Image 1: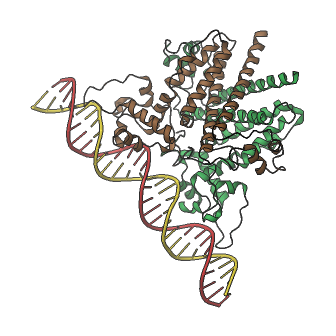
Image 2: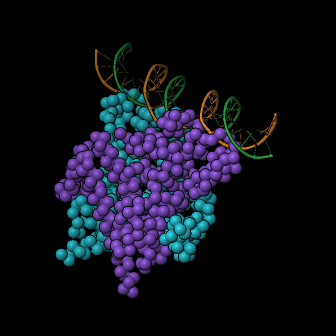
Image 3: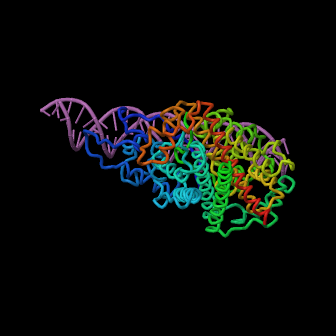
Length: 275
Length: 275
DNA sequence: AGTAACTGTTTATGCCGTACACAAGATGTA
DNA sequence: TACATCTTGTGTACGGCATAAACAGTTACT
């Protein structure tokens, strides 16, 4: 099992550069996500649907990662030719954006505003929800959006994330900063978790399988890495039991950091309330 | 200017699967980073040096991003044939790992332990240093390491990160969690910053160039996105002046979140000291 | 009826990573 | 010294990739 990176050159999903349907090809991802479908006036009804393309691409990425995702494989899975996809999607980059939008999806209803819980419970649940969503589709974290968030699903999440902060003493800019911080943390945590869990599951986990402390202790020259070596040999780093144990421990790590962040926000809010 | 994602299929950098030089080809990235070069006993002295390959690849990635990085382009830049690279590097994935290790590099000397500053000053400087390093080579954040950190440069950073925590009331595991949280935050912040700054610089910044608040206000249906829309029309989101202004504002956002995290850690430490 | 637009297919181009076989050079052994 | 062995850089080749371009069949508007 390989995890993904580039390969052949990572290519850019550009946020802008949308192009009207006037140019002949299918509309760009931005229009497809926000605009109406706008049934064409002539020609045969299309039997291949955009939703099917996105759905098949997501299924394929879930199974094999982004490295297994090619236009040819998606088309094959649908029983169409490779080029038929380009009648519905302007490019592979656009397809990636559509996949991202669909896989992130709207926030779950369970995140509906609960005024009783206060901002802390709201943000805690929101961040966990985002972490879970990213773990369900690990490739999400590998698709870079070039530019500021402008996808419906992203904005829906942001909306839900901001709403628990309705009454608190933060400027609008600061509220955005807070949920941006939390979402980035959730995403990068999910990326690390899925990377390591995948490596552990494939048996390619680093030298001493599953015991990171032992690995470090053996690898580290105490002269070059004094502090880290002391930590490694102290036995204070628990060896998790692979493979599920690895994921569990990383979940715990995510929760630990999240609690620190919310504590930190609490400090700021208390300091303002006192003023 | 395109930012990177996949393209041709993102391929995996696997952490394990090292292979001794016995197999014929060059040693894997793990051996190359940790082990001694071990001059061969026969054959002509190699003209092409591994360091040159890595250096050229980094220069190319700096200039054009990971999407511009191909074995052929690297070789061309060096005046050798494409295949000559494979005498020094087992695969492109291995080259990516070596690039990552070299580009991250050892932490700067200015991060040397200053016992007077306390843990907070140490971690603050450390996290900013990592953010700066990632901004210097934005593609760093796009290379996924499959598995737990095991590169010399990573471990050197971890060592430096853990050392300000020498005296504090945290378990070894918690210390690792703290610096992992901070490094992931620095990396994902740098990724967002460079993504948006690149988009702004290329003029492909989203609809209303540089004024994110205005963009949101226009894009958002108040019924679907009530909280976010309210924020957008409130005028509390500052429109930055592109292009440098965008980066500056994102730096400020990074610093804001960092301060929250350190505050949160402070809360935990105080609660333990009081116990 | 005619034409314009839209569909999915076929074919072709250029780039990619890299397997493989080779000639030339350097060192070991006889 | 002669030869075997191993190394280095090269040339060639292959399969996969994204996607441009031309095409034939289908539908709807004029």
